[in-house]
Image (cartoon, rainbow over all chains, first blue to last red; front, side, top):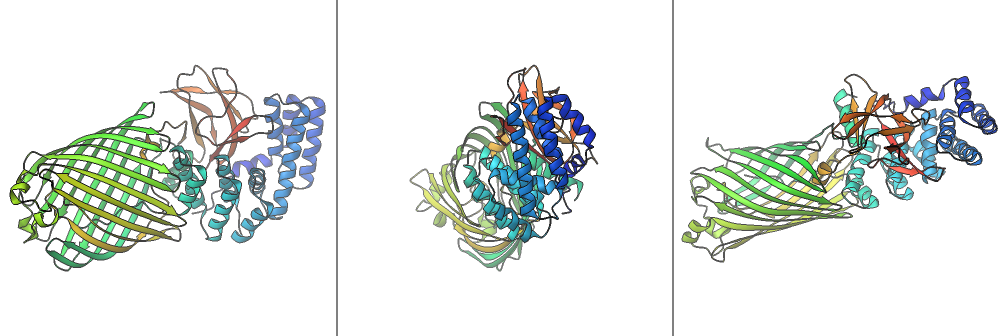
Length: 199
Length: 393
């Protein structure tokens, strides 16, 4: 399968004009809060980290009526996550990959595991990291999800295998299977079972 | 990536009822099959199979070509499918149909068609269905009508799943016709235990009870099932089936099976013993156990809709009974956005979303912001939860 180009939209968002970011923040946040967030954006920009996720985090906080210190704290935490993702994934990591890495770290994946994913695969790991995050969001433990994704990367699976795994774990969970068991069952990668029919 | 694959993947990822899932499997196997008094020796089989699933329709189209030692070849094709409709409260109706036809080198054939309406209940990790059906079998020597009633269930318990079935079958006529093709085969000696020929003539009603246990561990799945047939005049017969499947990489699997079947009395086919070893190829990855009936009956809460040639996707969210539905997320700077009523309880997002990972919240009728059911969610940093939506190309 060709590259998924999975997070192209995020790439375009990363390149959003600073002026537009300023307008959004200044229009929605208290002046003091906006100023703090803009400083964090500058830090991200200097470090060549994507800034749009930080803007969206601040806007999310504002839309949920969070107090200023909590908004600033959330943005700062996300900036830290992006920095950690950069350390784990290396300088070659793309913007979408950094965002996926930050999400995976926040979900509970260890920096060592994220680094190992990138090193083992030798190319973009946006989809595996996103699936890892998704599995944790569905109730799979971070350790189990991290182990599963790492094992699949080690076996050389394509992006579509990760996406199928994620979908079928979701299906099992909906039928009442415990998330961890669903992952274990699907990771075994078994075909539909049907005895050979004989005349 | 082909357009079809993209659409299929999008459907898989979103759990979208609007998009179907189709998978192809090919089994290549060799083994030994023995009918009563008819030793076929080593056989070689080629069995392509196509499974298609959507939330309301499923079918399984397959064929098997077998070359045997004692009769030259045998080709069998069949279709098994069902249409279902959700009723609410975990209940759904299902109309199943199946049919198959076997061609023999003699130029003769046998076949059977059957229709089975069913009522199904899906609750958490248990599925139960009550079914009644009717069909017609065309055998070598006779055609016969039959009816059946049954109860079947499935229970998921972690890596173990248990399936049970009880089915009562009744003939409108009984004709022993398989001797024409199967030579000296005497069904009494195999499936009828100590029954006499007179008993055979009256075996127009019988019950089959089956139980199958599946267990998945690491990359291997084991399954073992037993089946018991009980009829009049203390008639009884037992069948069993065991198989193991081991994944070999992403698209290949090795399987082995052995067992003893019950005779297909409606179609006039005798019981057999068999064992087989084969390789299964499933292009695109073999994680394809397919949607369970519970998946099909489950009311999904989100739909991804795509226009031809576009990677951007429309999103519909379930909001049955709501007067208004609003959503906000990182695709619109977290500003409330009203959805438009798309009918049948669905609400349409007035934006197309490009491939990416999105976070969002939803509210119905101006209530509190929440996460839509069916989407994974996580804690946000503001003492609440946020849903995560992944859109793929």
